[in-house]
Length: 421
Image (cartoon, rainbow, N blue to C red; front, side, top):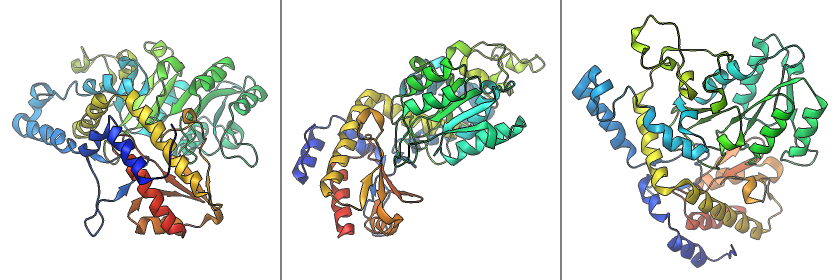
């Protein structure tokens, strides 16, 4: 798309946007003066869909009306409630419905997956993550290494950017795997890096990991609802994600988990189990030995929190109507417009460290601020912009296609100009 810097151009793009009406389905926070904030922080916490309250209230009312019988008699019976989410969630992450389950939270799911897919044997005991992985991922894999009596200083391999660069190159991962032949048990990468916004080539990473005999998994915390990871065709062994960022399910809401169908009924995989993963036809016999349900459902531990799932269902229903392919197309244009306007500023104090190619990023752009000066971010906050600061020197801006507009992007640049002036 050929962009220009005028406000009229942004307004014209909004008028032509086939998804523009979805903005009206979200609640925007307001400042102390009652003015809606310029919200560009969906990569940290998504906005609340207007219908979420109704979806939750419905379950509260059914609880009041039915009590325990709501498990079978509520309009959306609680017993199979997680099944109402699987098809829509599968579309968002590019999986088959039986490969996906909504359960627990992200790091809990990551640990459960590593129980099954990290199997250190002899010298094949190392885990690869990206050097600037989200801290929780690093803590999780380090603790798994320690659990197996492996020193993280020896067992953890970091996929690093080259000196003077901020993003990772696939050929360097290939070299890392080649250097540590027969030593890597697991490659576990964040699909979209939280700091730089770089979206990795998941299929290429999976192919490399499998070529060298390792299992491969992904953390989609910044990918689910943002990029299309195409998990089934990527051939990854597993993936985990949260739903409170781009999937707009509310703070601390449940996460999601993918297990490729080739592992659906594998008796060799170790796993931590709970009764909700047991064959549902005999689950309530209570005294049967554990028999896992096929697919990702077999990794469930406990019966699900319905109120959290109701919020997820409310958001997924919006995604279903919008169509994820449509959202991704708008996202590329919206973030492309933001990148264009930032570059037009020609300001030596601001540098975009997110890849420039639309296929190598989601909606987030990360701006490095010269001198690690947080004053620019603080001034933007005073200018009613909700963004995100990450140490040591990055502002993250994420125009989200479901509810952000081209005019939002234009307005942000005008406020940034005022701050810089």
